[in-house]
Image (cartoon, rainbow, N blue to C red; front, side, top):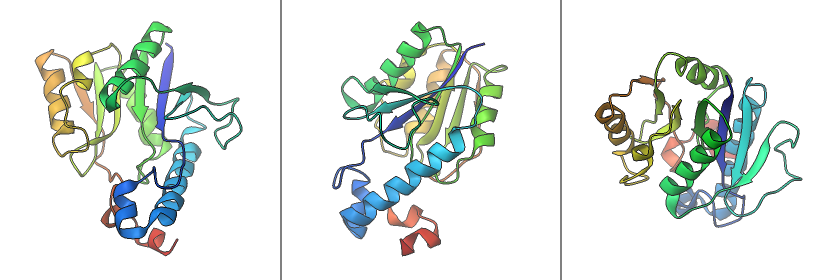
Length: 197
């Protein structure tokens, strides 16, 4: 079975990452925290035994910390988050992958065992969702393309996870739930130790 982990990654540019965090902490600190989150994501995914692809927001960087031998490198395409994720999943299924999960780089509580568990769940269920405490999700996986999961969503709101679960229910698709974790959007989401960065 071909398995693919998609990682959505925003190119680290001052003033363009973690903008909600920057409102209270400033652009430089927000960028430092973003890079720390991205590094955490790289460390926990590099040994997961699936194919991995980093989808860049602006341009593909072949000389950054994402090792070229471990991560395929691609560019996000489409308008808005939903369409960009849909296109990444479409490409994955067109390339013959049978189980696909997507994550971002915002979740410091995510670890390799949870990512691996997501793929294990997809052997038994149609989909898997990792709910975030803010009502969104930190991971979404499926073993067949379900376009509705990416459509008619108010992204970055508390309704995203519940709306996505309802989409699967409407299609009579089973969906496993992973542990609820914290996504970093604002200062209050950060672990105390990170505030000293």
